[in-house]
Length: 469
Image (cartoon, rainbow, N blue to C red; front, side):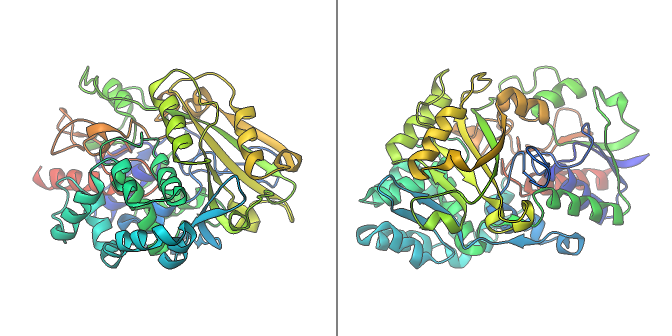
């Protein structure tokens, strides 16, 4: 009998398996797809030689993850590559604000009136970032806070809506860039704790940047898999699990799946019936004949580029995606240009480019034209650079990854209490009514992103249980 079986070979499932194997437990992972990866995969989606990331591409939370930083993943091929700027946000007048490794450079890009407020906001937390990140990403009861005072101060600033925090800024550049940071998790700007979301992304950039993985996001999953195998763990692909009886006997079963799938497979009935899924995205992967022709200079060297004319336009796009059944007319776009930092991702002189706009859950339209109109506002002539494109709406995203219910790449709405307390209001979110069944996906704290912390935290709950039996 195995000590633990993990269902799902995404970053959280693989991290949970590694953490258990490191402690001497026998572990096997079962994955329905033909390769490991989940939200961290790399494929030739358009043309030969163009290597795209179907989901996550830039990794501010990955390089800052306490889980990943505690594993020897560099020995297994993971290498972080940094663009000249972590992120840039261009404006219609040809200027741009930036999120730089330097707090000073970032503050200066906002203009004189907001430079001081931004520096004061960031510099109170940045010296304690590593401890704060561990405390923030380990909640709830998986570890006692190492610095409860700083965590409490962070909560006072971050728990109110981001619109409150943005009142510190007087001009639109700082407000717009910060609104874009919040929009990375598709949360309405006026929602609970959205200030914390923006702060986490900003602090992560200043601490260690927003890198890409050399060769693509698949490198993260492959490094975790190789390390797991060296620890004696096994990985089985092309193995769909429909019920617990499909799995070998084990003392614990750990699911890197949606709560909906877990309830169906483990026979938990309506246990997660109140779990909410959030907006989806419409994603386009591009093969380009050259770099994106940004009007502003700063985005040309940035790994990630946010596209939204101002905070009002971003807020309207988020409202349309989360509060209506219509896609926004001017979608807010998150774009990543991996080949700026990693030329191996495309043939010489060519580029890969990745963009998505938010749409309602399960939306079945085509956002291509609206997205490209937005891109042309800030990069005239963009369409002329397109060699090929691969589009994926909610249905295609859900087909590629069963955790993306209705195309929700966050594996659950990141709003209200569910931002912090997911998949249910509980002090033990990784446990289920079945004493041998646990959940470790992005539907558990600390939530979405390629960081492995949900798997890391769940593994603690599992090994405590195994040591008691």
